[in-house]
Image 1: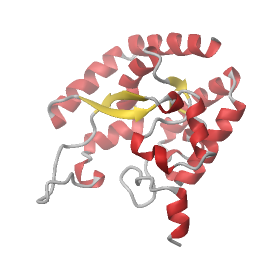
Image 2: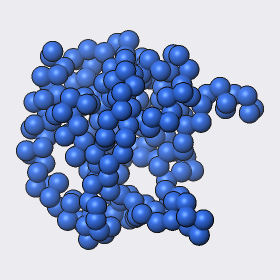
Image 3: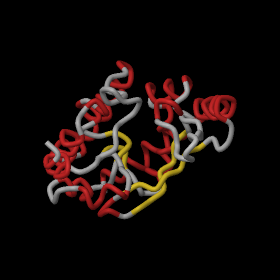
Image 4: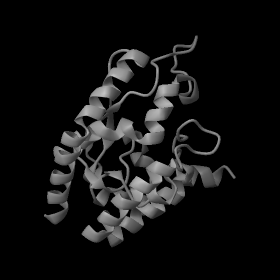
Length: 203
């Protein structure tokens, strides 16, 4: 109950206080990328239930000769990199928090296609609502390997508390200021998760 109250108050204040910033970012996205301004994608929430995540767009909708989307590095614009580095692209996600689909703090929501790839232990990350920020985000963000991220996510599930959430929120602001862990080594964003077991068998 206390966590949900913090989510409602935090998301409401965030949407009100950052409304002018969101308006400026929306104009910037429109000038840089055109429409649509918002990026919507199905992600996995509590107990593996799907929901539609909302963020500001940071990439061009560009495809190669084969009709497949170009790599993230090729589609990510300079303005998009700035939005990701400052986490301003995440501001619309406060609406997901207000709707109860996400929390301010929790494991990051990932693609539904990853569900069958998790080990039973990794799948425990879905025992809580996904969050805008989380224990893994303040310990390396996208610079972590998938296995490290999932281990930290499960640690959060086992140790979650209101005070831990407050600590994570405060440390998140510091991480955003320092712009650490924005992308995985050798990637513009984060490489796709292909499954721990498949990765181990390939060695």
